[in-house]
Image 1 (tube, one colour):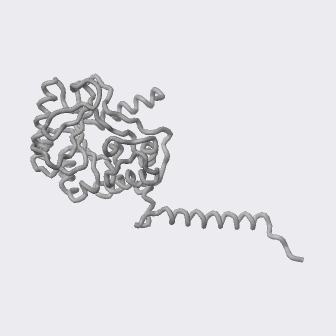
Image 2 (tube, rainbow, N blue to C red):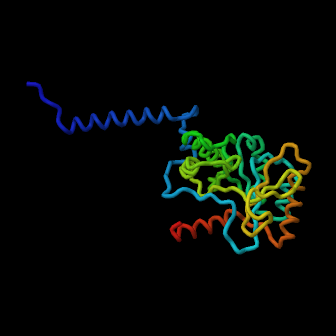
Image 3 (tube, rainbow, N blue to C red):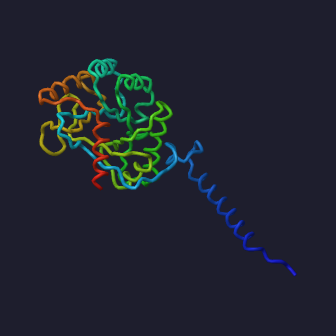
Length: 255
């Protein structure tokens, strides 16, 4: 008489098949380098909440925050200005733009600049599938960690466009805040305001976009901006420190 397999043997077979299917699924989702781009910055740990989106920081301190996009600036005078004035600037880097100049960015980081995430290739993220958005954000996390040994926790979406999928992808990649801006510096050194009162206020985040045909160098634009900041009785603060304090406060309040 033929013996039927025991329950233990059946369970072992089911587990073996499940393990093989899981391994195949991981291989199918990996990128051309054999690594799942969504996990490029490390193991995926899904946070309990989505990162907040901010264009200003709630503070009574007379500070504003200087942020620079893409990482195309190669002006030696800019690094000298950051060093001389000890400016706590934040650089949101796109690998496609900044990649050839990472050595220059290392010098900026050495004089106090903070390096944060602005995607690998600078696409408009809103409407893209979550896998694609995670690949852009987590991929740049991996690039910056491999180049500088850092893991950014701030993210600026290209063009300032995002959706709920962007926030989920950013959270998956270890981002704690999505940073927009309340004021932007034009190529000729003038401030513009997308919304709200058209003047600098404490806590405002200022964006300094890259400009291919600018009439002023990054250092000259920054000097002009610093003059406006000082005329308003303000100074430049370190965005990361203020945001960390605000996010901690929001979580303590249950927001």
